[in-house]
Amino acid sequence: MSGIDSYSTTPATNAAATGGAVNWAEGQPPSTVNNSARQNMADTRGAFNDLIWFNYGTGEQGASDLAVPSVYASSTSFTITGADVTLIYTAGRRVRAVGTGTGTIYGTISSSSYNGGNTTTTVNVVWDSGSLSNETIVVSLSQIPVTGGPVAFPFGTFTPAITFGGAAVGVTYSAQTGTWTRVGGLILFRAQITLTSKGSSTGNLAVTSLPFTASASSPVTLFVDFLSGTSGGIQGSVNGSATTISLYQQATGTSSILTNTNIQDTSQFIITGTYPV
Image (cartoon, rainbow, N blue to C red):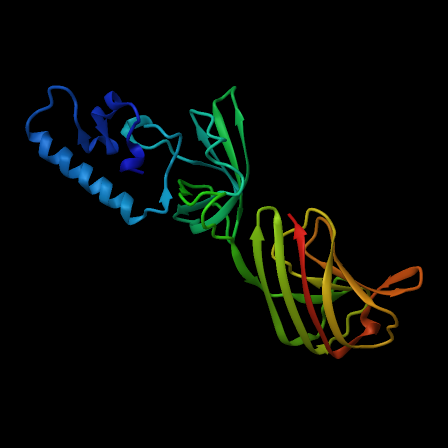
């Protein structure tokens, strides 16, 4: 990456920048003055054209007069070598990653840590969708602060479904809609499912395909209609370490999970709730 992100906060270091396209070295040839000035202008304009995102790196110039790169570590993490930048890459801050196989994806930093032994900062990210590929990537930080001022919360859609005993043979729907918003480590969601056939699978009912894995179980609010063989209230809970919801019927002092026998071909579910990730 070249441009303002390759500049240094130390003036003397800026004798060369933008991969060598800028040359302000002492005693430079006169022929390089206009080229360097023009390159500075182009770098400034390029940065303003993408103002919300900035390839911070370590905040200093790296090798070959370029920005310090972000390096693939896993599908959900990258590293930056040369400085402790955990106070810059903070939990909740938005990032953008670009790569040939990765495409352009957006996410939210979940944590960062520094290893003084190899002077490397590791940054972990929850991506809105997609993941990092093992390739050369460019990661940029959002310039919108995490706290104070307007904050853009990640959001998206998902397609909820149901299973009985982990299977869904012959299940069909007239409606499957889901929306989610992430606020820090909390997911807010709404799911609506309307069946046209419950199919032939048997066993415990589960609502599946939540957008993120829950770190712990959490109760949900729900509306259900067109059930069979139930008495008492119906309650639900997001299952910890999973992307599923279990539904229960309550009786005095006991509760039992709903199964295929409680569901009709026209059953409807509207479920809202929050859960930690």
